[in-house]
Image (tube, rainbow, N blue to C red):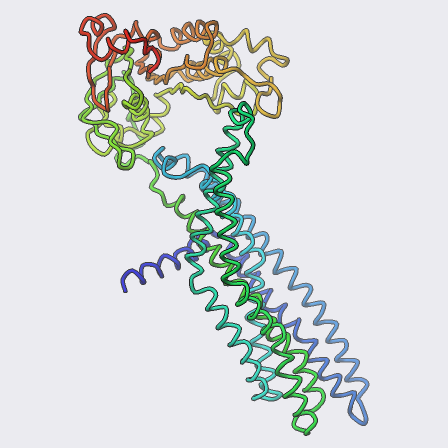
Amino acid sequence: MEVTKDKEMKKESNIRFILRKSGAHKYKIYLSAFSSAIASLCKLAPYVLVYKIITEIIEKNPDINSIKNYTILTAIAVILNILFTVIGLASSHMAAFSILYKLRLDSVEHLGHLNLGFFRRNSIGSIKKSLDEDIEKLELFIAHQIPDLFESLVIPIAVIIYLLYLKWWLALLLLVPFILATATQAWMYKSYNESMKEYNYYLKKLHGTIIQYIHGMNVFKAFNLTAKNFKNYVDIVHEYLKYWIKICDKSISTYVFGMELIDSGGILVVIPIGGLLYLSGGLDLPSFVMFLLLGTVFLNSFLKILNLGGNLSMLLMGAENVRKILEENPQYDSKATESKQTIEKGVIEFKNVNFAYEDKNVIKDFSLKIEENTTIALVGPSGSGKTTIGMLIGRFWDIEEGDILIDGKSLKEIPMSELMNSTSFVFQDVFMLNDSIFNNIMLGMDRTEEEIISACKNAQIHDFIMSLPDGYNTIIGEDSGIKLSGGEKQRISIARAILKDAKIVVLDEVTSYSDIDNERNIQKALKNLLKNKTAVIIAHRLYTIKGSDNIVVLDEGRIAEQGTHDKLLKEKGLYYNLWNRGDEYV
């Protein structure tokens, strides 16, 4: 019972989520609903006026003035219907696109405050689906289905009241096909929530696999493989197809039966029974005509409500996916006060740190102190936790046990803005915008052109930039046709770090993708970057960190040994083995 209650609250919160995100735009939604209701009444008015005109015409002495007045009123009703329909649709569309705009901005902004654990748990495909397709579904609901919903509610209520006035028991018979159609649809939708979960599962998997295929295109082309050879893609496409075949087999007959009852039920009831009543004198001709016209209108108005049932389930599932992003706990400062907490020296200390990716322990009881203006290197076999330790310094994740301090203050007591301003990261894989080299280096920092050029000179990339067609204004990326090598990207990344001039620098082996010439330039650039800095180098090529002040050797998340290059070789431990067996890249 408690579980059911929780589920109901969860579903209800998805609706509240949509309304809450409407903000001030909810008044546009209210205006749309009101206008749609008025437009629906205006749409029905001509039927009633036609009834009055027919009644007048079949009289022995028809009143021509009354017929003219009814005709004028019919024209006015049609005009008002058009006017209020336009107002309703315009209001709902303005509300929809305003809400989508706000939702997308809020979601992207929120993603920037989440730690990397969220992105490990959720694939790029599922996040893309939430930000794109699931939010887009809200546009369909708000812009189209809210007006349709109010029209579908107002019209049948107004029609049935009017038909009850003409012949109450014949009007009640019209409810029979509606009840049967509703029952068949309810039967069809009884397991719809589970079907929607399956749909979202397969769609997320399909998105993720397509993105994986595109990212690996260079490898597939090198081995002359097409999408048909990419087993993961073929498998998910087949699974997606089988899912839709199963859904169609399960629901198509019930769906068609329900739709036909709605579509033809009015005629099936009114023509035989209403016809007999008319022939026996129990129903006059105008009333018979009105039942023929409005009986079909009454039932067809429910089509939109029945279709809305399926669309609403998809909408709520999509809203749930967006909510999961927006309700994920952001990595804000839990204890920090945005006042005078600053990083001046850059002394880093790990105290009994434990950290796990989901169920896998990666860092175990790790303690280490890194003094200011020193360079330490983290080395060890693949999977020993080198990169993780570097990322923990920037709070890319939060630790479960222990503490990390900078200048004696816990990371959680340091404002994120101060931590990010005082820490530079140079990653192995360099992110580049499809933009000018100038903007790629500045990357949102408030710096002058002279400072950027100076940073590029220190990063040994200035001469290369000046050799490009438009120098610093050269556009790089897929669309421009100008692509950079791995070493050139690395030097631009180092230029960013030099420009930032942060006290702490974390390097994830930046010479991995470079040739000999680029590596020589990168090493010069690093000397300029690391002057008077506290530096943590995540090293894969052991010969690149021989001159480090301290080399920390990791094994399965623990410190196996530490010291200078010469000291570690003399100890003949893990570092000695890695060095002498030729594992210069670990």
